[in-house]
Length: 276
Image (cartoon, rainbow, N blue to C red; front, side):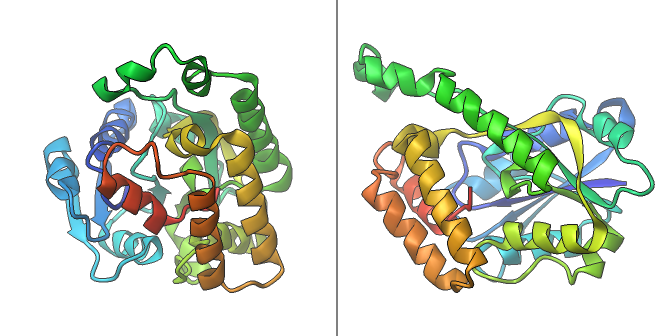
């Protein structure tokens, strides 16, 4: 049985797409259980997730993605669990592709990575003629190069990030103590533990599509530089709490919140402090 766990915080604009991709992508491979775990949203995330057809929508008693993931694992019944960010979507036929790729010796893995095109609202019409705005929304060489680098990092170094739909067999997750309960970099730490105990990941030959809002707001170069600083700091033993502050400060200096559609969405992005 396959379960998809979706942690969410102020994602009313995106969570329905995430849930729909999980349900529809199960296809002929059978039913997929979808569990959304909300981290205390102050928008309509919970009701939207219900309406989208999630099998369960929970509210985590503790704030933070690590606690949400652990709550989802506790609730779901699958022996294979996919962790899907609420601003991402699984590829068509993902369940069948996963089963085709997963051999008995494979205990964990991930999907590929693809950036979604920039989404526009009516409020963006005034910017439509701005060449710099159009360039940010296009599939330029910087974005294509980023996707290529992520693919090579995942396959050669065995280091997928959380927005690639990391999947794991329940026994393997249990063997590393479950989802690491830390305030930041929990996806990165989980991958490190899985690789150390169970070897290289099985990479599914299909990509999870993730929102490009951070890259649109800050630019590929700034986001990449900030992420590499955070990863380096973590490798050097800097505390996750301090790294989270670095990340938020770096995003603010880079203008990372100025293009979000709502204040709640901007606050959610700063709180989630995703590690890519």
